[in-house]
Image 1 (cartoon, helix red, strand yellow):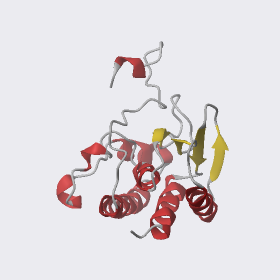
Image 2 (cartoon, helix red, strand yellow; image 1 turned 60 degrees about the vertical axis):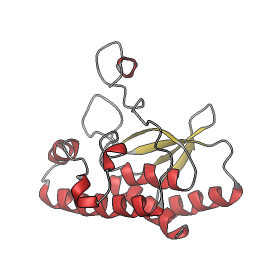
Image 3 (cartoon, helix red, strand yellow; image 1 turned 30 degrees about the horizontal axis):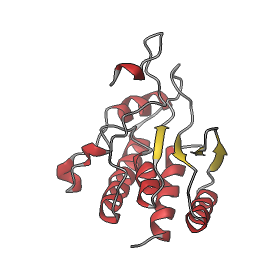
Length: 173
């Protein structure tokens, strides 16, 4: 993690993740991430008796390229499990993301709820309609956070996964 990603008290800044130059996500890559994250979220939900246990298990989880058939290190090793598909879905429709967080229940770092922040400038009307419709279908909120940035906020990782699925279904190509 780059030095500037750490706050003065030594804790990681959850809004400063390494996004790199992977803003181009194709449909096949998004489909693989959706399948992987859906499967793993269901497994972790079933195996985790508490929020703390889920957080511990989710923190250790990254995609295995052998399972997906794609080198997912570009996304899932840089981003929190639980929001990877949402980040990929936004990038798939040409909306660059800038930061995200799974929501770290009970942690002093970050928030308890998951969000993905994206650049709201220059989004065409058709894409805005798609994003608004997918957010509504997933019971997610959209909120402005200054400097042309927008957040999609879910009450759970499952909500953001539903958002990602809705985006993909709306853009099958």
